[in-house]
Amino acid sequence: MSHFLWLLVTICFVLDDLSGLLFSFSCLSLEQLEAEGKTAVFVERDGAIAGLLAIRDTLRPEAKGAVAALKRMGMRVVMLTGDSSPTAQAIGREAGVDEVYAKLLPEQKVEQVKQLTARYGKVAMVGDGVNDAPALAAASVGIAMGAAGTDVALETANVVLMADDVAKIPFAVSLGRRTTRVIKQNIGFALAVILVLVVSNFASSINLPTGVIGHEGSTLLVILSGLRLLR
Image 1: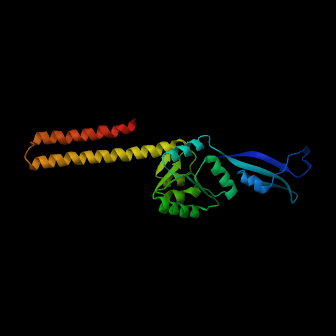
Image 2: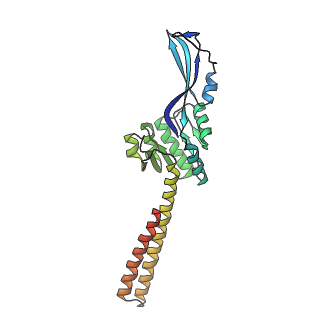
Image 3: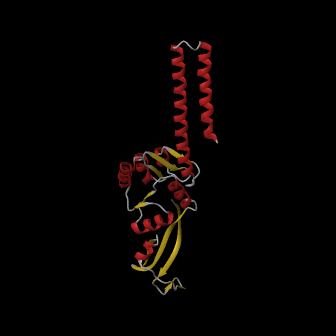
């Protein structure tokens, strides 16, 4: 749910003078930085720690809205990440997800997807990196982000969103549900028409031209019904 754009948010130098420049930034504890969702990077000079950089991912502007939309649809949103637990928890709270699983290797993501599948029945996995490919394959439905996705993720996924926009995920889920509903309606209607024609034939209450018109007419109605998905 986050950009791959790293933003410098905190600079803390412990030296009074570095390359002729003076710095007077206040230092924060490593635990506090991680609790705020930041990744700490130490700066070394001449074999000693010279400073600390705190960097973090920024949520996509549409991420919180996408998560909220999925939850309104009755879905539970879970975050799987290789980041440290404090960082993942901070990002998860900001995004509004229900569960966060951190410090996961690719094979651990697969195992977590299997556990979620056993718990909830169906799991859709969204990812775009090489590390996400095994989990995409293990999920009931794998969704890859097309613009930023790696080749292996795009080839593994069942659905590819060409626009790199997580706000399209609720739309894709909604479209899938509508498609399933329309297919079931069309199959039910077609079977009902066939059953009526078969019964009428055995009852000798329908002639051949009428039967052909009824069958072909039902086919056209099924096609027109499927066109509702274009709306």
